[in-house]
Length: 159
Image (cartoon, rainbow, N blue to C red):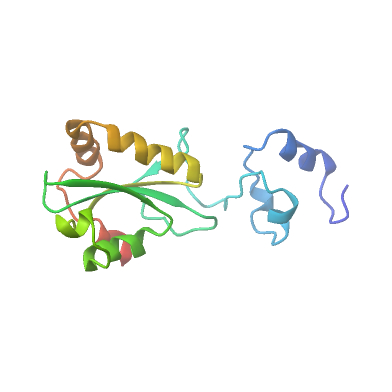
């Protein structure tokens, strides 16, 4: 037993297997400092997929930092832009209001048509790089799998 009443074996298992999901630690405020390599998830949250990425869920603002890979366009099957961010709502708003000069302002890319998220920044950056190297048809197929009507998903996540 540790000083706070937890079983030593469970604590050792965290360090032996950093990918173990420990639901009993998720609400303890000091647990993040004791076991920084473990995965902290609230028991009511949907599990992440086996690749670590989850596509198109409305539950995007929950415990832990999330990183988003997203695709913007100006019209259905129009110009496509792939990006990565840690705050999807803020970033899409910036695209819509054209705060920065660049590709999205030049081509008026204001529709969020696809997004996915992960809690690993390295995986998000790698996924963005992979998507940027995909041929256009693959990107369109990916968008149509999640969003066949090419709706602007910003309204779904912002409200």
